[in-house]
Length: 147
Image (cartoon, rainbow, N blue to C red; front, side, top):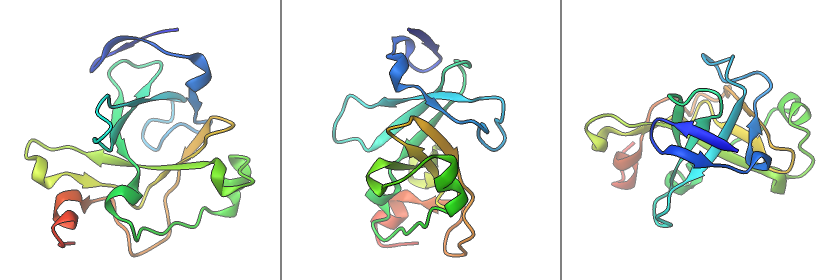
């Protein structure tokens, strides 16, 4: 399948790699299908979650455990049911990254992780009820021992 994107031009994608978000994403409820685009550089932990229907909509994402190894998440039981999760090995967790002009101020949303059942190719962004996390955790300040 051909996919037109703002950041990557035209891509050939495997339709079997499309992830369906039955409820969309908060603020983008009409966007239901995304594809994850990996960086060609294996050392770069950032990836893109590109809308299949909107070439202009893509989110920078990261596995939050790469930057915050102590990150803890309990996937609510209702989410496990919606995503048909039976085993933790079926789960991929990502966080959306905000990339400002000054890259040093890059933040990651740990309060609203994206949970994906990698076998069923379905996902949901979950808003956690956990006061330890916010929508803006500084990535580079964390690496230096800050926040």
